[in-house]
Structure formats: C-alpha cells, structure tokens
Length: 273
Ligand SMILES: Nc1ncnc2c1ncn2[C@@H]1O[C@H](COP(=O)(O)OP(=O)(O)OP(=O)(O)O)[C@@H](O)[C@H]1O
Image 1 (cartoon, rainbow, N blue to C red):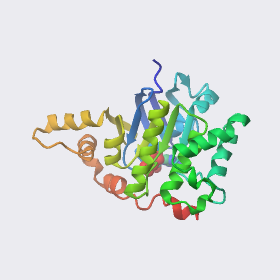
Image 2 (cartoon, rainbow, N blue to C red):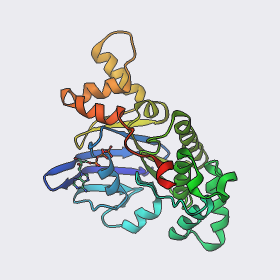
Image 3 (tube, protein in one colour):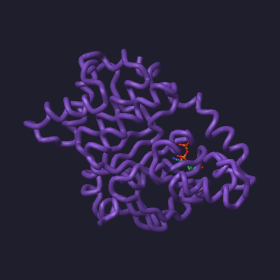
C-alpha cells in the first residue's frame, strides 16, 4: 500500500536558519500522526513544504506517491489544510464559510450543497450553520475551519495546532470530531500540537521534532516504554519527560515557551469578533 506521506531528507533553510534539517518520515494511510516540538522546531515549515506552499529545495516530499515538487496540483487535490492563521470570515455564516471553500476547491456544483451540509454535520455545526461566524466560540471556530478543510473530501488532512488557545472541553470537542471523521472516512491526519497530553491520547504515532530534526518517531506507548527501559524504575514517564530526555539540556527555555506558555497564541473567538 502506498504511504499517505513520505518525507526523505527534507531540508528547508531561511537564510542562515536551517528550519528543517534533514527529516525522514512516513505516515501510513489512515493514521493520526502527531508532529510535536517546541516553538521554532520546524513543524510549520515542514508542513508548508508538504502542502506545496513552500518549495522543496532539498530532499523529497511524496503525498500518496505524488512528488510535491513536480506534481503540485495532484498533491493539492489530495490535501485538506487548516493553518494556524485564522481562515474563517466572521462576517459570513458558518454555512457561507464552508460553501466558499467548496467553490474554491472546485467541488462540483451539483454536489456542493450536500457536501457543505455533510461537512457541517461532521463537525457538529449543522444547527449553528445559519449564524454569523463572529458569534461562534473559539472551539466552534476551529470546528468550522475543520469543516472548511473537509468539504473537499481530502485523503490527507493537515492541522497546524488545531486546539491551541482552547479550553479543555473545546479541545476535546475538536478531537472527537477529528476522530469521528477519520473513523468514517479512513482519512489520514497529520497534526501539530504543543499539547503532549492530547498527542498521547489521540495520536497513533508521534514524531518529536527539535531544532529541525526528528529526534524520535513511534507510538506514544513505545516512546514512554523505551524511556522507562532506559531509566529503570516502575513509574510510566510522561511524553514531556520523553521529550526532555531526547532533546537534552538545550531544551529548558524552549519548553517553557513551547509546551506550557501557549496563552499568547491563538484567541480565535476574540479575533473573529
Ligand atoms: N518566514 C520566515 N523567515 C525567517 N525565518 C523563519 C520563517 N519562518 C520560520 N522561520 C524560522 O524557522 C525556524 C522554524 O520555524 P517553524 O515556524 O517552522 O517552527 P514551528 O515548530 O512550527 O514553531 P511554532 O510551534 O512556533 O509554530 C524558526 O527558527 C523560525 O524562526
């Protein structure tokens, strides 16, 4: 079976900064794969190369076997992408927002209405779809953006920090809908997050990224068990402890600003209003 995603020796440089420093990774069809790492680890840059928003200057990106450098349109047709930046328009209703994406992604005209309804239902927004998006809570906005990405029926859904800035209940809501859609469609999901607990709970496998390099890649269980085996003792370590162990002493400041301090990032509800 063709992998949903394959990265081989991917590198990307901004001037002197090597944002992605040689990443090899495969994601199997149907997996929920979490890319984790502190601010500046290179996650978003890697994602932009996968989505063809950035070129692939060195190495190879394949999406269901298609080369992201040479078959950009084929890759784009397979992808749904929810970026960190706000992509919903507060002055449109939920339904209008999703319908706009259906047009942009060339969903055939006669299928559009049904597909928009389907996407809104999949994220639990069918009832609220007639309301202006500016009246939505942060969690609803994130689910609306999920619906926007789902309307094109992507085979690989890419979510950059889908739950950042949300309260725990809204975060759970977003993840439950991601899981339900995956279960219903077999879609592959690549997600970045700072929240180690979410990755532990919802991701089939996790890649731990630090300073442009993938330090480890395995199931959450395997990562924790491997650390326990290295350290000895009875207690099961947390993923954050795994990450600290793999990244070494240079991580302290980055973890403070990365995994714990996410308050300053995304305030979707207020920014829409
Ligand atoms: N447009 C840009 N110009 C210059 N440097 C950049 C640019 N975008 C990212 N970088 C640098 O590349 C490195 C990786 O950044 P990137 O945004 O990919 O990390 P990240 O893991 O996604 O972080 P975050 O969790 O904050 O989104 C950082 O050192 C960052 O400062």
